[in-house]
Structures are given as structure tokens and as C-alpha cells.
Length: 232
Length: 393
Image (cartoon, rainbow over all chains, first blue to last red; front, side):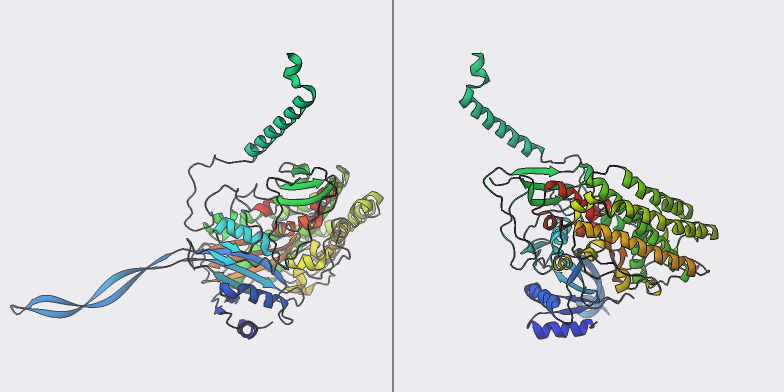
């Protein structure tokens, strides 16, 4: 099989401006991955599937990863001018001090896909996409039009991580119930105190049953004057 | 009349999306919307199919998951690598050994841990025994769903019991075995256990012959299964279907052959393929795979060497893999079982993901059921062979 560098070159030759980056995996598994820019992801995925040499026709595993905002504490050397009394005379002196600075590295959500080839028997090729942040820019293009196996797995990612897949035909929650609000696989998810509230479809079904009964009763009343009419 | 509730007509279908056309109702009769499950006896647990019927014909079907969801992945991210091992038994509780194996392979890919010879052989032996008993019970359940209540399933369970007894003797538990470790197996097999296994494997072909004779030529079985629930090969590959279901559609893809994980390159076995991709083919493939498993078992039991089952210096508890990630997969009896792990250098995984074959094989249920009779839905569902513990995780 081609190495990730060769795959990257092939993608860039086929899809101009694809914006593919290689992410090296330092683990012994040696499964390096390719990060795709969301704008061209569907084109690139279609190329990976249809290219005669790669033929990655089998999208085996799709999943999400949550990377929360990271607070990084750094020690920085800062030169400051301070007033000091030297030999009885007050004067300004330059002094270097160490300061601890905190900065926040913005987090993101990531979707990871593992591709294999049934025709050629090779794999895995790992492709990933990341969102702008974890709050409002959580949209990624859906790869369901390319591989149908993404359909339910993207629904699961939407359910558990909250990535919204644009172009997905049926993006509903998969494992949690529809009324559930949060995304449980996020790192900062807090369990609710009350697990007892569990909405079911019964209310809706009951409403429909009552409507239908009323409609039937109405129809009968029109035909045979109804039970009340018979009693009177 | 248009269906209401969860089953709705999806209008927005991306172009080129691999889906069969929806079936329109004939005439202007009323449609019936049925929720099959979650407590339907044929669903092997709690699973619901929302079906829209035009007379007896299925024209829409939506599977609804999540009744058994416990967020196993989140639990595993909060505990050490080893602590998740017993939980993998509970995924597909019919085949705990292969679940252990897939997880062990993923962690070994992450850490680079080597596995001793004897442990590799033991893994193959218990893995193939698992495949055998899974396929036997899958066939039993399928026949049960056809209405042959009890007898064929009990025949299958007779063979399964013998294998579970072996597991109990080896690991101390019939089903929740917790047998494999990163870089080997938990306990060694005694010579007496190997002899007992040889005896069971020797007797099994007789059971398979008997079971096959009872079923394969059966006229009712053929009438109910042939040409029912057809899955085309192109769709199967695109939808990520794996295992016996994929091979019943005629696609030659067996991870034991493709990846040669463990020591599968040392054994001679064939990959049976189907022709039509219907329920009957899925049923027959499992019989043929049982025979291939028996052949692997005979070879493995003959060649198994002595030695340790675990490197005594290997650290199985409290280790910290290097930063990185790994995806390990095996050919589980139900299909490709994969584990995707990300390590951030801590004793517990940063991300722990299971690729469940049962869930992904279920995603083409609608495609197979459209246009079939409602009685056949149960049969098609049974031929997928799922365990809800793995579907919902």
C-alpha cells in the first residue's frame, strides 16, 4: 500500500487545493493519519473511494474525539523597568523576572474515519476532520453520500459528541432518546442529578388514539345516532 | 394516507447515495404502522423496528436503538486499560473470547507488546471454539424464528454447552471469561484440558452432520429462506457489512486472511462464499464456516507448542502507553470487531471506541426488508445475527 505521503501527493494531484495535512502517530502502531479540510472533504473522500490504485471502498470505523480547551501554564521571562534605590539615589533599573502566564488553547471536536480496501485488501488509511471550536462551529460535511456505512456512525457521533454533519440525510440521535439535551461523550459532560425523567412516546400515541376514538365516535353518531341517542 | 410518528418519508436523499428506491403503496388502502419491539420475542433483547405496512408488505422500516445503552466507552475512559477487559465480555456475550482478543490486539498495537507462541495458539483455539458455538446458536435461533420452536435450538445448545464447559474449566466462567491479557493469556491450559478439547472437537463433526441433515434439505426452510432478504454485494461493501453476511453476498473478505493477525497464516482453511446473498446463503455460510473452524482447531491442537502463555516481565497493570493511537481489529464471529484507542500517556485511555459489527450489520435491515412480507422481517433480522449488548454498548 502507498504511504501517507504518497496518498497525500495523489490527493493533491487529483483535487487541487485540497488542504491535506499529515498527522504523525508516534505510537508503535505507525498508523499515521491525514487531516482533511472540511471544504473539500467530500471530493477527497470520493477520490479515495474511486481511485483505481487506492480503492478504499470500505469505510469501517467512524468516530468522534473531543479535545477540550486546554489551559497552558508557561513561564516567560519578562524585562521590566523598576525604580530602585541604589547607593542612596533613586533610579530606574532594568530587571529580568520570571512570570507565569496562562493561555487557553482553543479545543475542537474531531471526526476520525478508518478506511480499508476490500478490492485490494489493504488498510487502514485514517482520515480526520476537525471543527472550528466546541460550541458554535461544530459543523462538518457528512461522508454518508460516499460510504453508506457512515450513516449510522455519524448519527452516533452527532448523538454522543455533538458534531453536526451537513448533508446527512437523517441526522437524529441514535442511542440517547430524542429529547435528551447534552452530549455524553464530551469530556466536560456532567451527569444529571435526576435520571428518572424519561420521556416516552406514550403521550403522543395516547393523543392519537384519543383523536381516532373521537373520530370513530363521531362517525357512529352520524350513522346510528350514537349510544346517547339510543338511551334518550 | 401518509405515515406519522417516527417513520417518515425522507425526501432529502443525497445524490448517488447507495439506497434502493422506496416502495410506494399499491391502491389507496390504509397503511399500518407497527412498532415491532422493544419486547418482541424475536429481537433477542430490547430492540425496536418501526415498520410501515401496506397489507402484508413492508414499505418502510426504521430500526430504533439505545434501549441497552450504558455508554461503555465513557466508562472505559475513566479506568485503566486492564480494568476494561472484563467489560468487553459483556459486549457480545455469546462470544466473550473474541471480544477479549480484539481489545488485546488493539492494546498490543499501541504498546508493541509481543505475544508468546503458546498464547497465540490458545487464542486461536478459544477463538475458533467461540466462532463455532456462535454460528451453531445463530442457526438455532434462526430456525426458532421460523417457527420450529425449541428442538433445533436445543440441538445447537447441546454443542454449545460442551464448549462452554471447556471455557469454564479453562477460565472459571462459562460466559464472562476475562481470559486474555495484553501480551498473552491469563492462565495456561493443562494437558487434561487440551485432551478434553481434542475429544470435543473430534465429536463435533458428527453433530454438524446431524444438524445439517436435519435442516438444509428441509422443504419449508428452503421455501421460507431462498430469495428472501437479498443483499447485493456492492451495497454490502459500501455499507460496511462484514462477517458471514458480507461473504454470503459473495464478497471474499475475511480479516483472518487479509490481516493475518495472530498466527492465522499458519493454518490452511477456506473462506466459504455465498452466491445470492439471501437468508438461505447466510444460513449455509455459517454451516460451512463451522467446518472450516473445525479444521483450524484440528491443526492448532496438533501443533500447539509448550512454553509460557505470558511474558513474565510484561507489565499488564498500571502501564502508560506512549502518546499515540491504534486501531486493532479481528474477524469476530459476527463480523469485524475493532477497537480504536488514543493514548495521552496516562494509565487510562484518552479515547476508547468499539466498532461493533452487530450495529453496522443492522444498518441495511431496511434495504433487505423493503417489499418483503412482514413475517419475513423476523427471519431477515434473525439472519443478521446480532447481540444487543454490542449494538447499544
